[in-house]
Image (cartoon, rainbow, N blue to C red; front, side, top):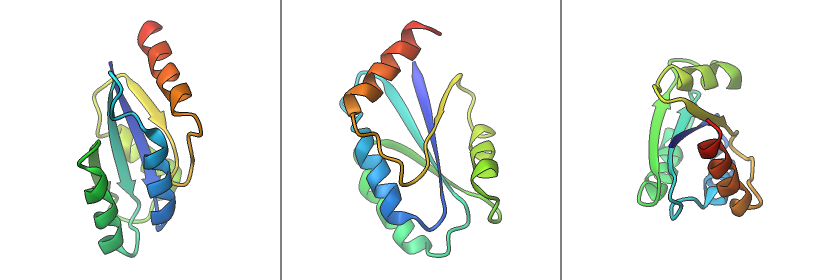
Length: 113
C-alpha cells in the first residue's frame, strides 16, 4: 500500500516543519509519499531549504500552483497529480501527536481497502 499525503502550504514554513516531523513514518513498513503543494508562497528560498532537509528521510514531491488558489484548490491540484487509491490530507501546522496512531491508521487502511 502506498499512501499519498497531500500538504498544501502558503507561507507557513514553521508549520510545515512541525507537520512533517510529527509524521515520523520513515521507519514504517508503509510507503508514504508526501506531496507538498506550495500555493504560491512568497518566500521560496526558505521553503526549498526546508524540503531539502527532509528529502533525506522522506519521499517528498513538491508542486507549485500557478497562482494562489487557496487550500481546497491546492488539495485538488495535488489529487490531479496522483494515480494511487489512498490519499490523506493534512495542513501545514497540523500535528500528529501520536505517530503510533498514524501507523495504526496506515495498518487499518491496508487491511480494509
